[in-house]
Amino acid sequence: MTEELTGWQLAQVNIARMREPLDSPLMADFVAGLDPVNAAAESADGFVWRLTGEGNDATSLRFMDDPWLIVNMSVWRDGEALFEFVYSEEHRPFLKRRREWFARMQEAVTVLWWVPAGHEPTVAEAEARLRALREDGPTPYAFTLADRFPLPVPATESAAEDE
Image 1 (cartoon, rainbow, N blue to C red):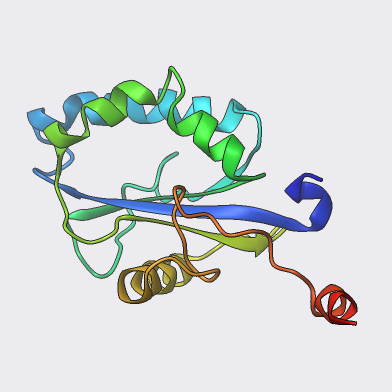
Image 2 (cartoon, rainbow, N blue to C red):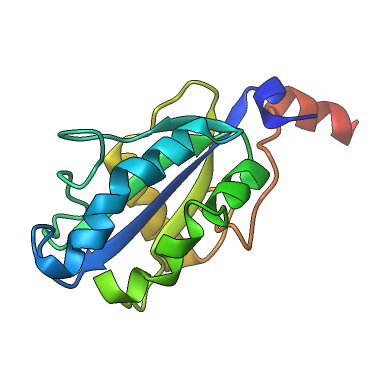
């Protein structure tokens, strides 16, 4: 059964610490790729929603009160759809070049969590989930693509299974 039929979807946030300001020559290729990569995400199978700020991306938004962190947040049908996009032909070249544009961070920079279908997570919600992952490791509340947790089980189903 797909997640969209269960009433749950997968939210993800990832952050990156810029090496230089977005308007610098170093960041030019990254900035030029924002619209095409965002368009590829929006047309990908399983895409539901993505966070935007000024313009058509979220680069104007700040995360954890750090002016050097940029944020990407989206909601997907399930983990497989997200995985397919992350490693897609359109997105993979940007993954390969990320160290040119962004500093390596020692703490977790990506977190996933289940949301009720139709819910658009807030930056504050994403910050709380990322902090939880950093403090507690992967849990059903906050996990990674490599350490996914199953869909939440409604209390009524859980109680019926215990009988």
